[in-house]
Length: 339
Image 1: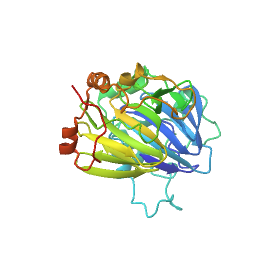
Image 2 (image 1 turned 90 degrees about the horizontal axis):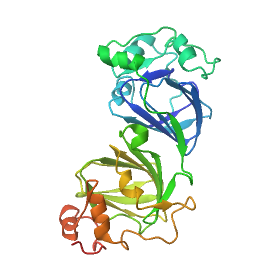
Image 3 (image 1 turned 180 degrees about the horizontal axis):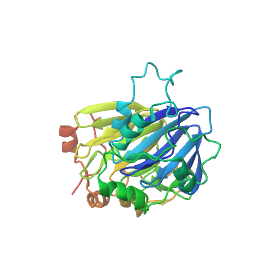
């Protein structure tokens, strides 16, 4: 979900019982309070929030644009029920905020989706770094219990410490790798999200695209931070540009061709695990750019690549399969013969 917010539109501190969250900042800055920790998160950085961890945030820029990732899905329905169609792609000049809305109605709606707003004393005890200058609006003055959760789920929320840790990350040399001519940075992976999702930030140039393939285990979503590419999915083709995303379901053959001098992508993979296929085949990045000279898929030993990816449920398509299953993909497919 992509969201634009301004100071004063933040939700009250709250806790989730069902989903992990990750916010990637496209523009602006905000302070995120998670338990006894605080993170200043700016453009190009992300912050991960485990379920069962109380959290809240304060926007520190004139406006904030974020990508909000939720695993598992379903919370969007809570927003759908309380929203109205946008009349333009700007923030409304007059609109109810959380502080002005009907507290009981809002609390009830979100409780149906496993989210509880914290009472004022809970904010003090569980989020000690949260600014005291922020008024305890009416959504936080009383602890309102869940009305729809099963008793065991509410007990988990109240008593279960999260085994996962909140963190802030950004593209950096310490995290980044070079693989097949691309720059890759794992912003969140299996050990961080309990296998819920993998989020990779990548920089690619024309000629470094992987061959057409199909996943048996995971769905993918690409969000374009910069550049443009054509994405071929079965019999469909999508031209995807900066600020746009494309979803690729598992079991759907797909490929892409980069149409700009370079492309910067966020790749969301659910569930996680695919990062292991790259781990033994990459090298530490020497700079935060795609390598100028590197082996690409078209130059590498394709049989070795095929075997490696097969172990993780990804199958590289043969030329005749590409022609039949992806008829719009440009011909010829440049690749070595498969045994």
